[in-house]
Amino acid sequence: MADTKILLVEDESIEAMDIKRTLESLGYEVPYVAASGEEAIEKATEIVPDLILMDIVLKGEIDGIGAVSKIRDLNIPVIYLTAHSEDSTIERAKLTEPAGYIIKPYDGTELKYAVELAIYKNQMEKKRKKVEEELLHTNEWLGYVQRAVKIGFWDWDLVTGKLTWPTELFELFGLPKTDEPSFDLWLDILHPDDRELAMENINLALQEHKILENECRIIRPNGKEIWVSAIGSTVYDEDGQPLRMSGICLDITERKQSQKLLKESEGLLRGLFDNMPSGMAVYQVKNDGSKGNDYIIKEFNQTSQKIEGISREEVIGKSLSAIRPNIDDYGLIPVFKKVWETGEPIVYPAKIYVDEQYANWYENHVFKAPTGEIVAIYNDVTQEKVAAEELRESEAFLDNIVENIPAIIFVKNVDKLDFAMVNKAGQELIGYSLEEVVGKNVHDFFSKCEADFFTKKDREVIENKQLVDIPEETIETKNWGKRILHTKKIPLLDKEGKTQYILGISEDITKLKEAEKSTD
Image 1 (cartoon, helix red, strand yellow):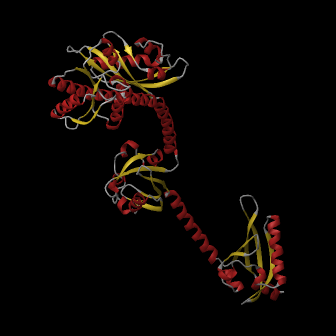
Image 2 (cartoon, rainbow, N blue to C red; image 1 turned 30 degrees about the vertical axis):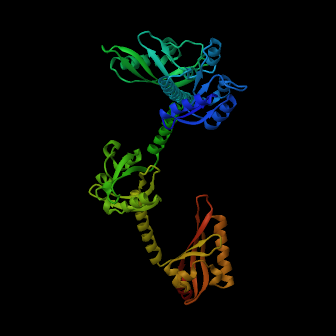
């Protein structure tokens, strides 16, 4: 009570002092005693007390009732003090909605209870207003949330059949607010293809005491189709008979559209995944990723299944080590681990993998998915590797023949007529090494007359795309002097039929010519 301030308004000083002492003896604080209506208005605004004891009859232009009328906006409870009980005065005082009346001469006990009751009622009124304000705020917020997320609450009395729903559901269903909510109305706006399932779900929820979960389509009066989710809970009586079902109805159209797009996207990705020409395996990493057992197969495309000769069902959930027993010795796991830790993709070049079942060459492109999995796109390049090795062996065999054949063999590029290759017999004849010859033409080694003759014959090969046979041509060599050659120049054509190289095959016939001459 010590914190309760009471403003006393009484123009009789003796009586005012008596009331003040009584109030203070009861534990109340009386910070001021006003003697007029004007003074009461000023001090009430200044002090803002918890209660005002107001004498109705005051000296001055404003009486107690007039003073209270001017300070009603402060919401301070008022108890009137009066020695008059005329009906007209009481009726006038009622308009100010006082907290009570005390008729002079007052009784101390009467004063005590009147003050306590007025303060209690004021506290309760403040709490009530606060609750109402909070409730109003909550309802406003709830309405905003319902409109924002397109949700509405509904209640279905299963005994009377009465169905109620708020404004938000009228807006969601596109129905005029003048319509009377009913179960038949709900069925009417349901998509015909969804009615049977909706009824089955309702009956199942009621019979098995389960939560109702319905996803169905609504057809609005304007023809627009939307998806809604209805979720409800049922109240039963003591005998287990359903009394009431209440719940929410939520617009899930966007979610359904997203699910459809996601399904289509997943279908496209699955098609690309399964039909890509390379094998693709997706691994979930566990532990520290340092062993083949740490990589669990989550996905395995059709090309991988063909490469491995195993079905998807046989490998999903298994570790990489389960299908590649010697994978830890292959060198790929450290690559996986690095990609997993850094997120940077790595190309692991073709390398042969060997175990009791496989002896194949694989090349791997490894990257990390945004969701954390390791993805390996790989190809079995065994056939290419075998073919390349066979080609290398074949080329080596041919090179060996070309290099060791006694005939002079050379190849020229068409654009500059420079040497691309000269075999050992040719190098020995002209007296220059392969390194000294490649990239240079005949003008770098022979006289102008000889070089011009050789070039002329080269041009004939290029233009005619036919073999040119030169029975005799004389060249001056660096180490062996003048030699006589029988040369054939052959055009090597590209895919478009243009001469790309000139192949020359020469035979040193110097001794033969000398023998013929001596015979003559």
